[in-house]
Length: 320
Image (cartoon, rainbow, N blue to C red; front, side, top):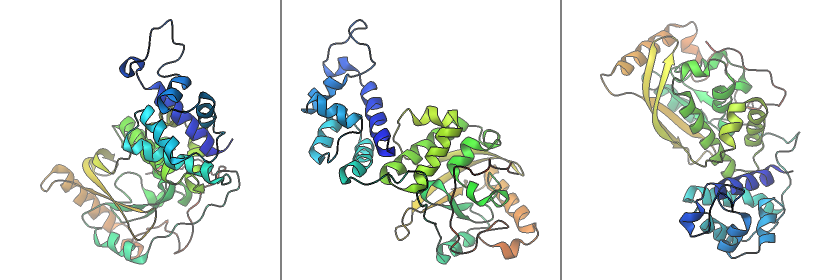
């Protein structure tokens, strides 16, 4: 079954299960309902389409789904704006009749960062941890502080420098993030939003597939079908060198670089975290070869070298 077929079915089932029939004026009662939320026939009735057609949509067997039908289903399920966008995007491959970009052996295109963006990262290196996140949540580039604010990115295999893989598969993730469950929920929300925008992107499919296979925690959160994107907020990080950091993160989409986001971390002036970030910057600056490393660091890739991950990739090494 195609990835998009699985996603549209799981999403619609989760959304109808989340609705309260009584709130929609529908009969309830524990003896009258074998499933939580709405039945398929009730969604079809509310959307004004046949039960057979809605069933085929939910099972991923319907091609050429019109915008009007998707809008009717969205109204019936009381979807939010973000959920409507996700539904439209994940239905798009079926509407186009595309092949399965998530099939084994699909080509994963490389991702590169412009020299001007690396220069921007370096300009912030003394005070602001920063990094560039690409498709599938790959960490494409970082400055000295960004590479050490949590995981030591330079010490990781290039294919394992990925925010989602690190949070769910690296053994040190829970120690670095005291609020690990919240971080995990945010990561899944971001990854699902991206999978909605780019349901046929091989890299997104590759990351999701590996996490579904290797992480029970990821499966649990992913199957909840929450569609949200967290682009700013606060994180607590227990840095191995300077101790606990309470940082504000902001994410900025690079309008001229498709699918790349600049993520920065900062702390209030005069706070303990600001002082600890300065201490961390001094530690990084004193390390051998710091001046020559620039944006990439010891493990940097040559310009143009792709970021990729195969299903057979080794487990991530322990980060310092």
